[in-house]
Image 1: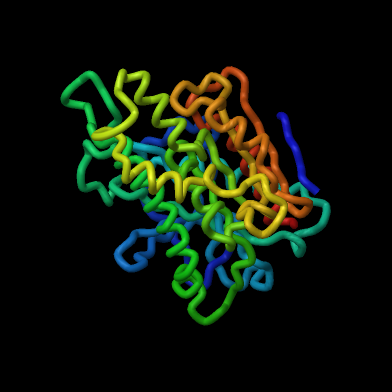
Image 2 (image 1 turned 120 degrees about the vertical axis):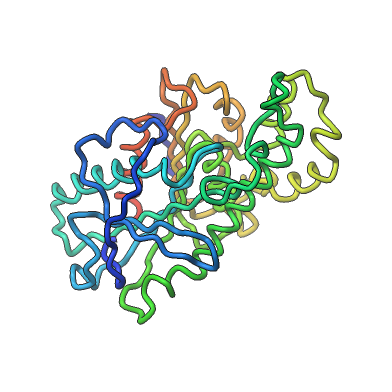
Length: 331
């Protein structure tokens, strides 16, 4: 791992386990693991899945004075919240092992909640299946508005995360029974794109783990268009869309600055990518990540895993769990 560093827990409402298995997005760790406790709540019409460690449970009396870390785990394009559940199980399994081995005693460990939602136009929020497709030579699978749809979805989901940060404390702890000490955002593929946007736009999210994601949408989508022999421009990439991207994309921020104009300053970011990824190549993110300035109080770690394509691998799962453990749960 190439790394560079710049100088649930319990819930007031019981987290009862729901039936919500099904196919997962290629996770390979979850067999035999204990399923987390799951509670689905509805926030202004948005179903939100809240998971806690099954060995801690949903009992408010367990370690009630510990802070609560809430981690959003966002799925990829054509995925769903349901298909992320094995990853949730895997992360809790890794955290549980670290908790058991922790020499600092349980009193120094904060609790973890993992939150999943369906991205816009995905899962139970599906309205138009074609809008989740890409460009294709097959007319039945071709989405002429791919560039527009994908950016709208990832920015919309990033807004959903910030919206939930506003309201989840009231839903989870209406009497102020617990305090949320840290917000974390992680996501794979399309969810990784959204994670970068959250890191840029929401100062409350101090820890981010973009997984096989991209922060430079124009470079990504222009390479994808070129591969399909599409010109860069209308109607596939409208001028109005380019204006939005140039204003809102993470790469448009002053990410190398050492003052308050840099929204990434002081943040702790773990970037996970596959060396063989052809869908979101590491080369698209490399210059940005290497130039990203998180300051003396921030942390920047990068792992480009050899032999891995566009996948959230078991090694990446372990690295994500380690990062959350070190920088949120025992920090």
